[in-house]
Amino acid sequence: MERCGCDQCTQQYCSKKVSIFQGLNIESLAKISSKVVHKTYKKGEKLFLQGDIAQNLYIINSGKIKVFKDSSNGKEQILYILTDGDTIGELSLLKKETINYSAVAMENTRVCMLTSHDFQQVIRQESEIILKIMETVGERLQKVEGLVQNLGTKDVEARLAQTLVNLAEEYGTVNKSGVNLTLPMSREDLSNYVGVARETISRKLGVLQDEGLIELLSSKKIIIKDLNKLMQHSSQD
Image (cartoon, rainbow, N blue to C red; front, top):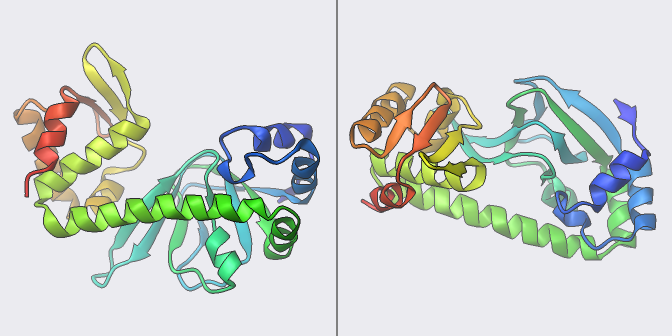
């Protein structure tokens, strides 16, 4: 790990990418950057595991992190994917309790970290950060509630369609062919996200392609030909 304190990090915190630091003045950002350390996690490396004691606030500088819980059948249930500017660990630090999910790098990922002690100092001096954290936590709860509803009330094909719609809205780019989507996860992770076997995901992707809703370019590259029709498909029970 390396200590930060650089102008580049101060400018990054100023940006809208890191929502919990929005509104802080340059002096406050400089104080935070002086406490930050950097670490690069390799693909597959764990930041922490479910049940660990919260020790750091993690800020994603570059790369992707999957956040998941272990299900009763021993498989991962992915809750959400974190990318540049996202934070993780803040609520557990505020509540001073163990973490109830795991986080693993999906690719080589550079992370900025504040220790629990430094984080507590920062929020005592900058109390508005707590409101930003609550907003972030609320948004994530909405995503998890949507995931639970998706898993509990829809068949596999509709769940997959809904997942593709959600990913397209976050990661897709629109062109004359439709929406180009590069999946931010492997087929294995996609199957865990939807809650089915990998073979089922491959089969259902083929069904959606046969129905003219998507075109499979590779294991990760998909063209969504008609996003509205895919959304209608996702609403089927």
